[in-house]
Amino acid sequence: MYEPQDVISPIISAIADIVHTQISGVSQVYEQPPDGPPEDGTVEIPLSNYKIADDTNGKLCTHFTFGLRHFVVRGSFPENVLAAYAYWWPYMQAFSRWSNQSLGGRARLMTVTNGGVTQFVQAGQVFVCLIVNLEVQYEFNIPTD
Image 1 (cartoon, rainbow, N blue to C red):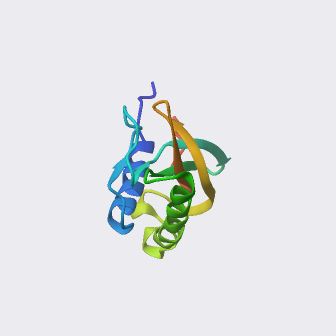
Image 2 (image 1 turned 60 degrees about the vertical axis):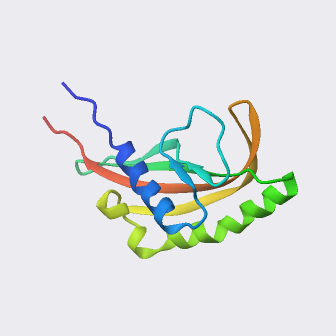
């Protein structure tokens, strides 16, 4: 009988630690979506999707995609878009840093794949957010019994 095992939350926690400690201006990192509307400078880290890349040699290689949402709630729409643009470079620096690539041994590799600035509806309100998509390659042994 297989037992539930959470392999996703520790990855999200490692990503949250990088965002909180290495990107200036982040006020709060939510590992789960908050109950209410996000505030300026808050970040959410939901799992967007996953893909099985390989299942050979007794190992299962999974690619998880986490769509980070950095919310900007400051002024007018153009001001919010410009503020979101300003955060693009700090995210690229943090997630391209060699020491962050394996998430402290929790992953084989982590890379930024794509993203953008968009309007996002949460808690019945429209917000501007910078989306940063991270692909995390995770590998584990397939049970053979």
